Each structure stands twice: as structure tokens, then as C-alpha cells.
Length: 568
Ligand code: FES
Image 1: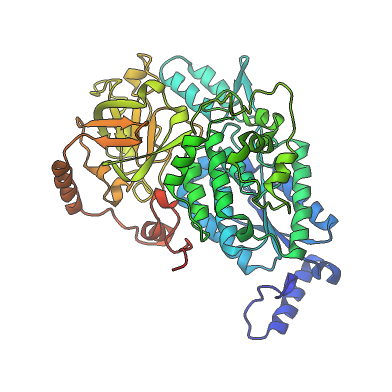
Image 2: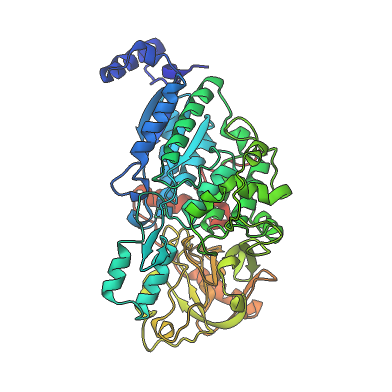
């Protein structure tokens, strides 16, 4: 098989000429023949002025390049799409598959023997790993790392769990304009990803658990020198993989690896978005991943990591306590340590190298967990025939079994227009319902599932209510919130048939979410729904592709033509 510069030649009908031309052009950059004969390691560049989470990417690239060259390889940096949560309209989820396609196609189109993908902000690692799974070229992942914590008036602050908490306090009149502005400058004090157990941290931990990144890569803070050394080591390892041709993602992304990742997802109190991304990655392989497996694992796996939003600490504290290797060690036989890693060994080697930190209280033992059950549960019922998800670790214990009157919002816009109306007919026992916010509906499945507490209730001290939707929720949020209701209302799901005043029952123990109307009435309402015109199909461009091809949440919201179907 062709290697190095001879790979992926441009089609001219004459490969020798294609190579001659390629060399002629690349020599314009000053490369020698010696450099061009080396094994090539591609390095993705996701630096963008619109992506502060990736602010350290240029430094990481330099460190990776150094590692590649120390090992005798030739590094080639190339740009791909970069996505930041706050700079992605309509949502970052809408763009994830575009980044996955871009990354996949550019890895395939350009000559490289191995690739280092550098990412971190929520959707970037999933997109890059989905791409890597589809290309199946030796790949090593370098997360950008979490931010360090901020401080305000003696209090430790973290993006963006504290963004939400303090914004809610401001809405309730507890924080004035001057103080909320001061907080605004202290929530994100460095480059790197959100330092709570949000989606970025969750996906970095999952990446490490899947064996796709070197040990401790999930937790080393973004500004630390240790992260640059990790990047250098990753470059070195990528150069070795470029020569040996492995391991490839298909050798690492096995059923055991996906199960390990799901165990870690539950044990870290991870983001609900992690379920969608893990499913999307798994569906790029022959193995797939079922929601029921996550629930079954959650009944056995305790939450061990004490991080916000479910717990008390931040990513740098997780790191100093021993990081993912220590967590894997604490999980014991719940982890299949025979799973191979990109480092060339197995998770058993990673566990053996875990650091013992005396007195640390961030990574608990199994006989002293944060919560006895996993952080997430999968619900079913007449409202969610295809499943729904609740992060029970972040829910109020008094609400996890609750029946209340539905208050329905038809869209994000409807909610924004009415939620703070002083005359809104709402009590703390009601169930807030938001629909048309699924993968197709909004579109892009916005993180709108964390419906704000209506202002009039917030001022009375109400901090949590049952909230249900077909939307997602930021991994940094908390509350008794049912998400990812499938099928979504815009795809004809029963959520579209709920009316304000219906009674809704949530019972996490029995894994049920139901609207308490009889089957005949629900069927009649569903039939009337079917008569209403489908949502408008975008006239052109990526929006049209997205509308036509996006799958539901239980299938990872990938495009139907990108998943790998199991062999017949
Ligand atoms: Fe980038 Fe939170 S906004 S990780």
C-alpha cells in the first residue's frame, strides 16, 4: 500500500505525474527530499478566533510537531472546521456532522500515514472521533484540556455551571448589574474547555476510556506545561503508528471499549450529551450502542467523581487526584482492562500506572460513592416510545417521582415570550413542557432543555421543577430535567400531542415518563397531528442536507448516510 506522499494521489490518470506535480508544489514550502520521504503525520488545526476554548491549539500543534520530528516523522498541519458552543448558530449540534464530514474527507483526501486530532470544545472531539472511526487511519486524540478555575469574592467559579447559577440569581434579583458584570469577567479565566463535568470534559474522559488518547489527557489543565509534554508524547506516538500502521480506530473501538466508555460516563456524572455522541461514534463502527445498555450499566455503576454540576470540585482537582487512570482503578472489575489503547498496551497498563494521592476526596472508592447508582437513567412511556434521558445525579430527590400539570411551550420562541409573564398560570408543582426542539425541530436540538424557572416562581425561591423536552441540555446544567424525548415532536412524536392541563407523571425508579390520558385519546390526538403540515424543508445548502438526513437522538443524531450499518 502507498505510504507518505504517495498516498491519496490526485487523479490525473498518471500516478507518476501526480507525484511529480505534488512534489513540485510542496517544495515551494521549502521541504527537502529527505523530509518528503518520511512517514507523514497529519495534525488537525482547529484554532479559530471564534473558539476561545481552543486558544492553546497553536502551542499544542508545535508540541505535537516536535514529538513527530523527534521520532523521525514529517508533521503536516491542516485546517478543519472549529466549533465553539457560543459561536454556533443555530446550535453547535447542527454543525457537528459537518465538522465530522470535513475532518473525514480531509484525512482521506490528503496524504498521511497517521493523524493527530486536536479538539475539545463540546462537539469537536465527537466530530473528530466519528471521522476517525470512519476513515480508520491510525489516530491519536489530543484534547485541548480544561480551563483553570475562576474566583469571585472568595468563591470558586466554573464555566458554565456557575454561569447558570449566578444568572438565575441575577434573574431572581439577588445579584445586581455591577456584580453580574464582574462575574462575567471571571467565569472563564483561561483558554481551554469548561472546567466542570460538562460535555467537553465528559467527552475527553470518554476519549481516554476508549483508549484513543494517552493517559491523563482528559484532565491536565489547558495552560499547564504538562499538557504540552502530553502533546509532544502524542506526536512521538503518532510517528510510530505512521510506521507500524496501527493501532487503527477499528482495533480500539470494540464492544468492550464502548462498554468501558459507558461505565465511565455514568461514574463521572457525565453530560447527557455524551450519550448522543457515544452513540454516534459507536454507530460509525459495526458495533453500535443501545440506550438500554447505558441504563443497565447505570444500575450497577456508582457515581465516583465529585465534580460540578453533580458534585463539588472542578477538572483540575480531578486531575490532581489521579484523573481517569485512578477512576478506572477505583471502578475495578466494572472496567474491562483488556481493552487495547493507542499507547500500544491495554487499560491494565493505564490502571497500573495510576497515581496514589493521599487524602484526595475527588475520586471516591466504590464503598463510599457520591451516588450509589449511575448519573443517568433512560426513561420510556407513552411520551417517549423511543426513549428519553434524565441525569438523575443532578435532579432534586423530591422530584424524581412526581405527577404534575403540564404547561406546554410550543417552541423556544414561545417559551421566551411567556415564561416570565407575571400572569403565567404556573405553580412549582407543574411540569414545564417544551417541544419542537429536537434534532429536526429547532433545528439542531438546542440546549434548551434547561427551561428557566418562571421569574415569578424564582422570586418565591423555587429552584427546581420537572421540565421535559425533546431538546438537549448543557452538560453544565442541573435540575430535574427529562431530555431527548424520542421521537421528537417535529417528527410526529407524542410530545406534540400534550396539552397544557394534562397530567404528566415522571417516575425515575420505574424508568417511566407518561402523559396520563387514555390510549384512545392519545391516538386521536396523534392522528390529528399527522394531518398538520410537516415543517418547512430548507430550500438549499447544508440546512437541507441536515433536514433530510439527521437521525433521532437515540441514534446519535448522525446523518443516515454516514452511519455504518451492521453487516447483513
Ligand atoms: Fe467550549 Fe464549554 S464552551 S467547552
